Length: 423
Image 1 (tube, rainbow, N blue to C red):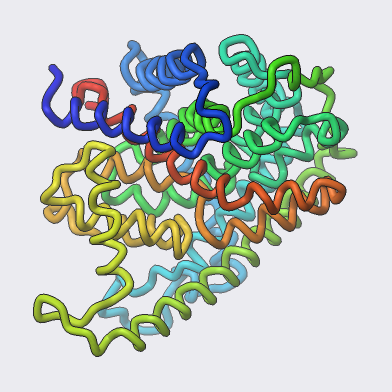
Image 2 (spheres, rainbow, N blue to C red):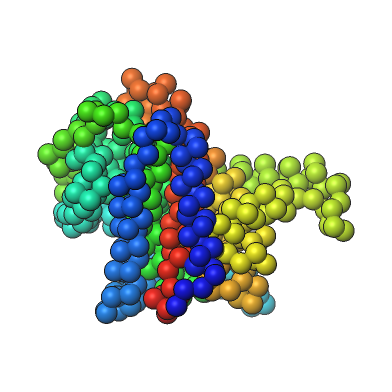
């Protein structure tokens, strides 16, 4: 049964598309067929992953696999860090919740999943899954082979790792295709971080691992649509053909594990550094504006972002009574990264946020579109295609907007679905 909240999400979907059209470089060239196809593919993927018979068994298996990886990672972390990582405590612990430490309980997951992803790529398991999605996007959404493969790789790899897969074709991509790659990269997440997000949300959201995986998959067609609306492809251009070979190769299983671990370490260090700096900057801003009292409480950046993003959260289908908290989470994602936003979402008491809002925010937060990712994207793409650095710099802020609204579009599509399919 459809409700007013479903219609609210549909209205939000229309507003998001209209905003992208308003920022388009060619408003006369609106991809109507692509818009219908992208939203249709999103809806079908959500239905396929949640509504078809047996899908809940698959999602439960994904959750079980994530729990298994988390438990195995905890063993390795405790071997290195002992009681600091939740091992046997040398003293009586009065507050068990205080034992959770982001550095020891979340970041090691990224190392393990990064190594596993590299190993699965070397064994061609992840590679064939990626090729399958690439073929789907190529056939259903009219992408060139190289762009389709990069988009598919973004679902499982990172926003910098995926261009490596099509490195031989980067110089052949049009401006529109480069922008598409940037938007999808910012609008999805890497496999290494998916498990970390799921671990954070597991205590407060049923099927958290399934929702996070679906969010990254479903956001890919949304990112394609957003990018094509904002920077349409010129007639007769684009469509670089790829032979679906890959520049991402490993010499052996051991080589894959070692290089995957090394790549994961770089991700962990980047995340740690960005979180330290951005959390410190927000605290500094709060100290400067803390003397301003509004509604009998000091003004903070979090409160300001909550007010600013309330209408945005409402457009995804969130009830207005909870839009303030949801808007704060969206603002936190944009300024402090999605990691902080997911941690804060996991801290929200069950009675303070209903299941629908919590689920919609999981989809809306599940993307790399934050201010810190701007520097990572520019740096990474500048290394891969230095001759196009100025072009990347000229599109990066528009790509950040595109990546941000990509996840909002995904949340709106999910919000428009009947609640029964998720139960």
